[in-house]
Length: 107
Image (cartoon, rainbow, N blue to C red; front, side, top):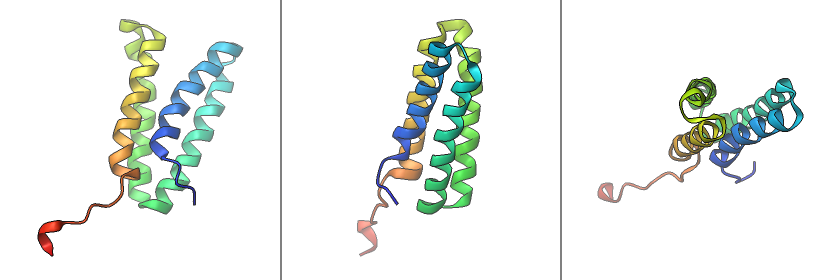
């Protein structure tokens, strides 16, 4: 499968989903973007890592989506979406995308 970092897609899905909802005025359309991005990531996470990783990262994605709504009340919608998108990407990279490290001490 592709070597596109899932961290990039997961974070961008949150950003683009919100942008689509804002631009069109149709929140459900933004939800479709979120769901499409998350689905792509889940398939990739299962192939690259495991079902457990896919489930955990999916829960994080959904939790951050909820957090963005709560955080928006304090800092505004766009800053909130940007923050959770960056958080999702930052959390996803080491878990799902970073190459496995070789333990140099075990040689």
